[in-house]
Length: 162
Image 1 (cartoon, rainbow, N blue to C red):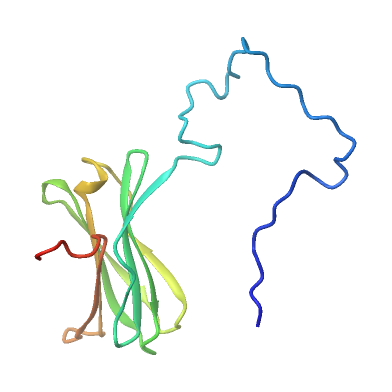
Image 2: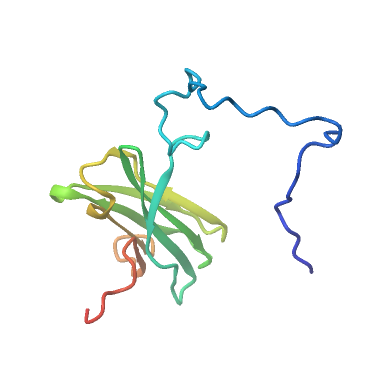
């Protein structure tokens, strides 16, 4: 089976061969009113999102996960990307821990369908920089006595000596 590229380069629309390019704006041109005061980080598609993610982890039982802290503008939230290949539904909790001992937790529906999925906490107004936040997701068997199968965090690999 061959892999096909998903991106294609283009030098313009079909039939553009006879068209002249638009002239450049004069040097003394003022910005258009709708773009004046706009952040250079918008790029025409909305606010840029910064992500700080831990490593991709896989448990011997078949859980794959990566957990991230995301920041966009003044908002911060946590997201975990996971795949459950255990063949059974699991309990999972995503926690976002921030400055001042503030913690937000979400219980995530983790079905047995072996498909990639995500879970995220609600967005909250940032109270410090992105490094002030940590996210952790725990996946366990169902029920009160369900064993912990995987813990995934937004931190990078362990620091030397720890």
